Amino acid sequence: MSQHITRFAAGTVAVLGLLTACSSKTGGTAEPPASASSSSSSATNSGAPKVPSPLPTQKLIADPCTALGDSDAASLGLKTPGKPNGQSLAGCNWHSTRFPGNGITISPLTPNKNGLGDLYSNKATYKYFEPTTIAGYPGVFGSPLADDRSNGVCSLTVGVTDQLSVSVVTVVTAGKNHSDPCGALNKVSTAMVNHLKSAQ
Image (cartoon, rainbow, N blue to C red):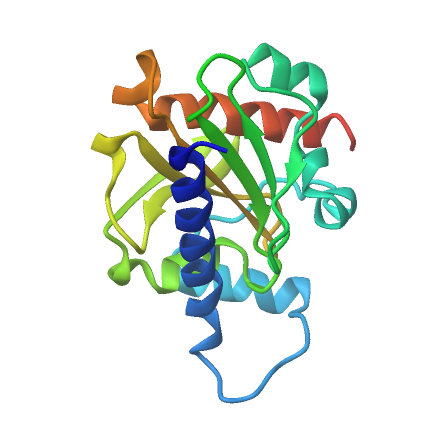
């Protein structure tokens, strides 16, 4: 495994740790998963946009490598199948067929029970925070760690239900997308949302 991928894996774990840690600071005791009504209220109070139509997430949570179909991944220049990341917060890694140092990690942020609402509640701690829309679904380009976009690293979180968001992180060490990693990430995330839509 290249040094680039090793550093990317470590960085992704750190980003995901911060993304999921933020919501735990709001209460002193563990709480059961929020209901749809309470989560929607939290999303509204935080300023996060509501998800227009919840996407099916059961398979995604059980196996994050189902986030992309093999044909979708191949069309994006990614090796198939994706490989589980082996971390406590389950995710899936895909690597470029052309540039070994380029990779994508997709992870459902299951500890956060308010979806994008948890990110919006903590946006002041982010190094960059840019709302966007992915195939009709709300998302945020941003990271609580660092703004490394000029170094080929981009992080995006997409709301797939009002209770669940999905982290998509890319590192582009070589190739034309190095100067625009978020553009490449947009394509991957669009493919992910469309793949989840097809399961409805």
